[in-house]
Image 1 (tube, helix red, strand yellow):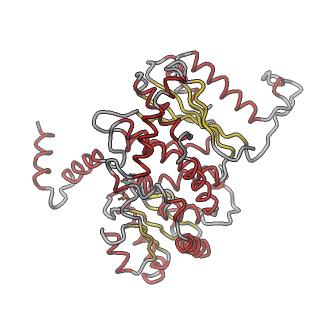
Image 2 (cartoon, helix red, strand yellow):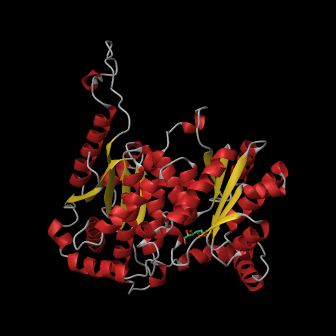
Length: 446
Ligand code: PA5
């Protein structure tokens, strides 16, 4: 087995040549130096760049001890957060978990469930039904401490926990991860005496998976955060070289974008990677989609989505390219059995591994899509283990910073996220939004 993730751009041909990709190398290297030296726009949000190699033993031990305490006391731990405050943990936990753990009785660690990532009333009702009478803990994560979705979920679950356990005991089962000083959550955590972790000012939400935001839920779920951090640190070192995997990815996607390929589809052939796709969409969408620029990040889960999106990808508008995440080794072996009746005609597969069929589906799809005009970038991951996921997360973060600078935007702000919030608060008559309320109501009544 390889011991590192890798990239292959040999099949970008329907869009551009490999030489055209490599022609962007000097520009990409300049962008990489801008990230590393902190000389570009948004340089007050570069705390993630050296995070893997600088996380202190004290912090890691505190995360592990806090996780152990929640594991000891709780059947369920609810992670409350949205966007960058939940997607990284969700992605890593899903990638490492048994696909059917929710239905299996045996479970060493608490079941980690998520809330505050939507405003679904039924979702919250059903979650509260699940937690009714159960021992549960809460990790509430909000950098600003004022985001509506997690604040509603926390208000409900805190109240429920306090009714079940009493205020004092409940406070021992609530951990808050937020700003060092600012925000409502910081104030509440101080008043109630919750154990807290800090999200540093210089780490934006979508780059925070390797802070307590991601590490604590991952540790509670029973996974090895030291291996995850070690993998990320390996990639931190690797991506400082003058020719590296992050540069290649940033060069390829910018060359493709400039040639008219405006949509990138992140493709997996392993259902456990679904949320890596969701995390990646936020990372790239929020970092690059601004000033009327940016590759639109989409994601599909194959082979499932070959039966739904496959037609569009094969023959729709030729503005797309694919980045395939390919896991080299599965954790388990399943062999297709022989069937004497052979009514399904599948005996030609008898004795073969299911993963062999999956890999041929991937290869066959690549050939078909490249023939159909869809450029292909392939990223291989040795296996779904903490170390390689750490490498993958950091690789995507570093490439995102480089790629954003090549695109000519500030990859570390997100001014567009505020627009819906303003309208929502105006519609809900939030105090302080009187003028906006009047304006939006007048607009609706037109
Ligand atoms: O990346 C981002 O900045 C956002 O997705 C935030 O993480 C998200 O909006 C949640 O914000 P907060 O952690 O302040 O509640």
